[in-house]
Image (tube, rainbow, N blue to C red):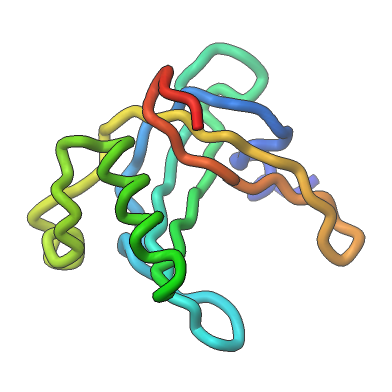
Length: 126
């Protein structure tokens, strides 16, 4: 398995994590329609086979998902007031905050992938 794959979470589960500063910003777009999202890159902080591995949660910023995404982030990180501009201009950062990530395993084009499905407050559940 290539080295790059070893740095990411490899199985489904719920993991205590810490947010790290994204190398390419908090915001991105994905797919043919350039669907906007906010990325929360994390690394697992609990002892075990996934300790130190990375996983990225994506919160979609479409009209249909926007309120839920912002609401989730405000619930998980009460230090943040929902100001997207503060993230954009780097006057606020989620980096260093703790959270829980629920990862699920999916098969896409006959390849197993582990994705962050839910972002939760530590001990808060979904």
